[in-house]
Amino acid sequence: MVLLAASTDPMYITFRYSSVSLALLHSHAAEFISTDKKIGSEEKTDQYAYTYEKGTGEYHSEELIDASDISTFNISPILIAPPSKSNIFLAKDVSLRQAPANHSYACVTPLPMSLSWREGIGSGAKDGAFMRSEYSDLSELDAETLIISANETRTSARFTGRARFQSGYINSSDPEQGFVFIEDEFVGNFSIVRGHKVYPALNKPHMSLTSQGRIDPQDCGILRYIITLVNDGNRPLGPVFVRTSFPSGTSYLDSSIRPFELSSRNANWSIPWLSIGEAVNINLDLRVTARKENYSSSSRAVTVYQAIRSYEIKDKETGNVTVFQTSSDRRLSASNTSKFEADWSACGAGNLSVDFTATPNSKQPKILNYRLTLENQGRENLSANITVNLPPGIDFINSTSRQENISEDIFRWTLDKLDVGKRRSISFMAKGKEEGFYVSNASVIANSRNNCRKIASATIEASQEIGSNLSSDRRKSSSNTTQFEADCGSCAPGNFSVAFSATPNSKQPKILGYRLTLDNLASENVSANITVVLPSGMNFINSTSRQKNISEDMFSWTSIGWMLERRNLSASWLKQKKRVSM
Picture 1: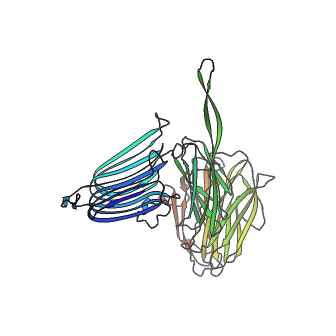
Picture 2: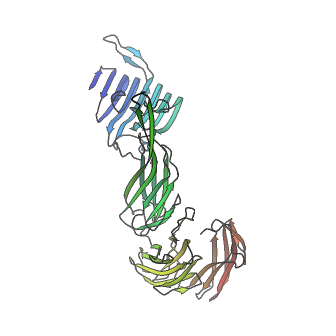
């Protein structure tokens, strides 16, 4: 039912709704305004909301009630990000300015009238969350409010006067612990942005799981996912196990939480504890091995909680009532499938795609099958040099293509032809001496076949667990790829050779002897700058040649004028490991 009464000057509006989808727009200047709008009832409906205004002066208000689309609504972007998937229960944009106005009382001469504004909005659910915002003694107000549900509200306001914000939760079936209440009050001139979300959103154990993916704008070779797990039920949970599958065309790069289990296609994480209302984000970075129009990923969270049931047995003879309790384990799960359309318009074509994997042999788990795949995504034909460094404890067996043995654990392959749009791979086998977690490194340098200009370089890691006992404290796998343009002019093929090795000291295995060798294969003298970054856990000791200490873990060497034709140069130094991780 809608009741409306108005005269030439004042405006009185009263609305009562039970179920409605409605848009309201009011705008008046220098008048007395009094409105009262409600949807639902505190006593009769599961959810209710109300809004009102009263005062004299300028008045502008836009309201949407039970709306599924607020795109045309004049509301701040800060309130609608992230967008809600459900209907907006109530949205309001109001602007008030206090000014005097004339008011008539039933054919009596109009009398001057000046009232400060009062404005309010509120919502709630029966035996659930509630919120109220009330403004009074206002000389001006500009406010935007979104009531997404009885549990969630967002407000942005600028006002001069008094404001009171209340929110809480009430459960009449639990009078001792079923009431939570907070209140904030402001007096003066303020500009605020606030929001609240009340938990539990549901009166039962429940989890929500979402996943959002995007292309890294700084590096189009990386997809970044945010996996969000929320305990929106009525009891703490833990441990919770989260499993996410990687979209095709991607491989694992890094994550904000270390996975306790990792394979080439999925990762498993363990969340020890989730309090009521608590949310946990897992930031997952994936390397793009193939550009696609869209990427799909599925995630699933699983936990077990103890359900307690109480029942009464009454003794027929004595009338005494005995309460019994039983408990049982209940399985709780949440799942999510996300698909996002990839927009590559802001990305360059990309020069080189690199993928490096290690897979155990199904019959002999200590035998690892390695495969490194290159794809030319650029605009010119390439050649590529691939160098693989195997970790200690892994012995090279053989390769499907001819390799160059640089040292006991460093091997090099040369691809003379990698045409535009084509993909080429090298495959080799290696054997682990014992169970453990092994990380192998590969570096790739791609040059133009036309003028030997360096087109791209990349470093990548392949990690694999050998053995059935997964360790939760093992070192996580990580890798990094960089692409850059390098112009070496009209240089001839094969001008420069670089080899980099690390060898443990035979008497003190924690002391590593590093050697970097440059070989000038060209017909002219050159100079070189060498910069080395040490990983965490490594301390620099000394060098056979003078170095510049850039930072605690970064050092550089400079050679000017003495890299003569057909000569090689070596720089050696020592580092000590503070800890060893396998």
